Image 1 (spheres, one colour):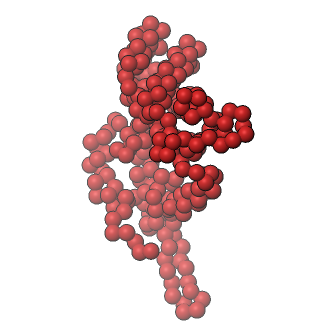
Image 2 (cartoon, rainbow, N blue to C red):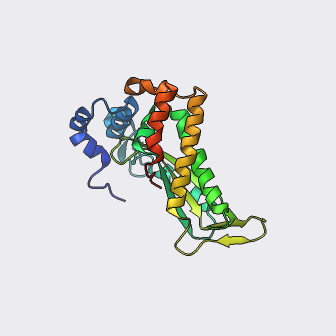
Image 3 (cartoon, one colour):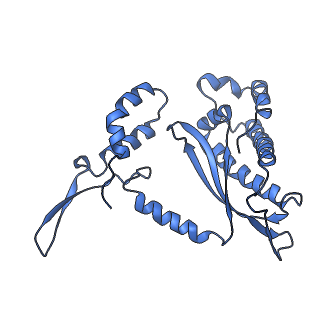
Length: 242
């Protein structure tokens, strides 16, 4: 396969400095590091080694990879291996892709409490899927799912959300038969969204009551119990994207 006409590294070299300057104050050191790694990947900046053909004596210079997990160039092989492994995990049934997204105000609190709230996002998303699927009004089955966390959006800004790959059915509650969902329809989005909102906010309040949340900068006042409850109230009325 030949080299593509345009790479992410080319875009970063051409437009990266101006974009970083425009986004100054919004990008983390980690994001800057990723951009730098992608720009330098497989270039003289990272050094390299010489390959020589024993037959004809031809030399070929091969530059080193950055090995950053976000790099689309040097991680493509690893990504393919990962996709193949996950493909092998899938059941031979129709699968569905469900995404659970946090509203912007909640995402801002998650940015200051990554370990706790990213874990909570995983736990609540799994609970919601299993709860609604087990309801006889919807599917009446015990299901499984593969969940993957993404913390950035396409604009490289903080945007925590969980992707779930879910088989279109599950085991009957008695564990004896397979229950399939309707073709082309897994579970009602509105029901998933409402339960996601309620359960996540309940657990968020519990974490605050246990003094397990930290707040900084403009959000420092949310450490106060009354201020947090007042801030949380509007989030119960916002439609959460699922």
